[in-house]
Image (tube, rainbow, N blue to C red; front, side, top):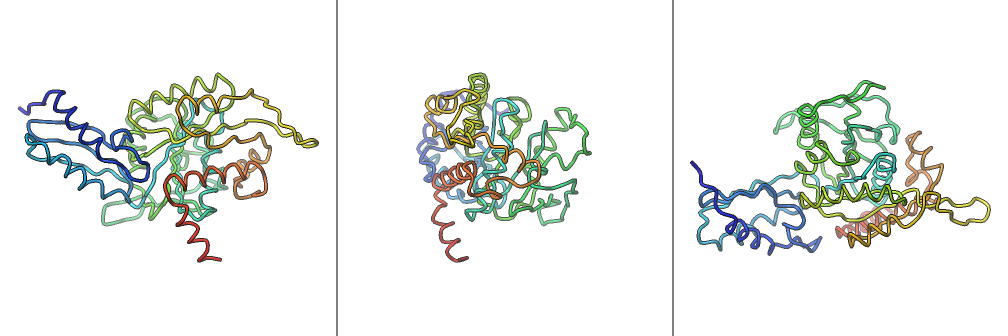
Length: 349
């Protein structure tokens, strides 16, 4: 029978792994949640490494660090990645109705406008609305044959690749899937989609905390999440529960987006905080994470979602569009992709 080693050896391994720094995010791979399922059995180390395709260089560095352990005969590192995808981000909220999906689709549109190759995974099993927000009706998901088995082929609309659980359901019918079926579908969408080359894959997570959210976080190389809230305290309290879940699995919060922050008077231009104020700033201070943007209340955001025309791309002069562009610019700067897209734009001009 295999003998599991004591916690002291586990801590020794963790301390070595914390010496491996991800150069873009400038933090260690343990704090970033990249190392999961770490086990020591007899004289062998087993772990899963969740990374993007541009982070393959981390594996030999980890092996080099662990080779310093005199008692370790071999370290087995299972690479977990989504083929072709550089950066996987989660878009999350503590409760429904705060505009999480609207935020996700508009960030995707803004990133695409800046030259990024973007995919959207609509994993919100309780309200998969992204197809409608991008102007898609009921559409069939094509399955293609590849050397690695059958894969789903994402739909492409407005320059964004999309897979949605809503495309598997009948129109106007609830997605009444129980745990095992839900787990299988989510896992398939994470592992069996032929995305091609993507700079960003944005995963629209279900609101709140539960089995579906935990499955997605644990089974995907999400390198960080963006939390969407509204200004009032009741929404902030729900987001705090989300934060606890992400901390439990070691996934960092990259920033806060405050939606429905204020209403702009059409006559005088003054701003009225209809739903109170300060929620996003309070969360950002607590997390020591940036407040990425405060999105105003704008009827065009709603109508754009209903008609499949995200405001980030359909009305670039609006204040809301400017906020989404600012968020996209901040993400590109975080992941050091700004120069790449500048060069891409210059070649196209």
